[in-house]
Length: 73
Image (cartoon, rainbow, N blue to C red):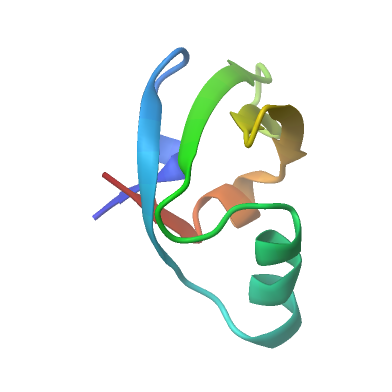
């Protein structure tokens, strides 16, 4: 299973599944990360947290823990 956290800088991936429960999953979905959407990793901070991505034509920063909940292909 490949997650958004494992994606390299500059790579574009497609969201397959969201893991997590309740409010955490809902927050990720409210940010526009839903199944089938394409996500491009723009930057990763030196310690790996946060990860900056482009989704639905806007830039978004995700915590490492949140990025690990997004399964991609």
